[in-house]
Amino acid sequence: MKKIVILISGRGSNMEAIVRACEVQRWPARIVAVIASRADAKGLLFARAQGIATVAVEAKNYPERESFEAALVAALDSFTPDLIVLAGFMRVLTAPFIERYENRILNIHPSLLPSFRGLNTHQRALDAGIKVHGATVHFVNAQLDGGPIIAQSVVPVLADDDEATLSARVLASEHILYPRVVRWFIEDRLTLNATRVALTPPEPQCLITGADLI
Image 1 (cartoon, rainbow, N blue to C red):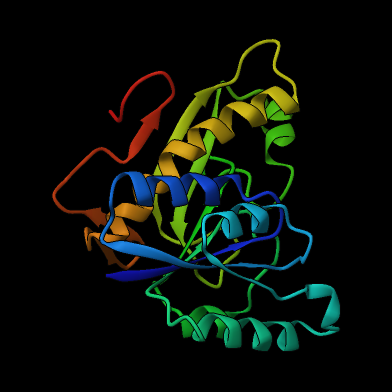
Image 2: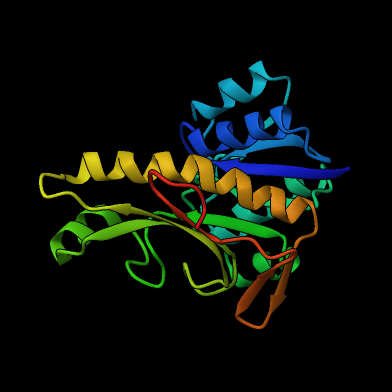
């Protein structure tokens, strides 16, 4: 049975979706810990209520990124994870950290990568006038939001959307997409070939809002 550690910084709604899916769908895996970069992260309350171990590695207590990551590594390694899931973890990780857990870190980004890397993705999408937006689950590498893409969700951008409404629509799709991809990893269905990710047996890797995977 594989062990999953989820990293959060806030409310952890994607973490909640993954925890629930793991339980309901009876994955061959266990969420062994939720680690937060803030002790007041609301997601820790949910995790504790589910009987999941929680750890706070507060970034503000570490003046240097290296010392923060050393503490994070110590916390992670105590749980010997097979998979690390970033779910609203608002810290940029260094190349040495990523290399330590190579091909074992997943992230979800609120845009259709490679468009709109970084922050403020929803407002930037609105400003660009695009007609579809979404989210991307990818392997994490040393390039910010640049790791190999595993799957994406697509939502429409409506004429009367603002940042809040568009964000909510994308987040709802994330709650479906992210658990599905984590399960693929747990079931050893993902193969990384250079910059491309294959899914075996084949299955659509694009979630369209209002429809099933197509």
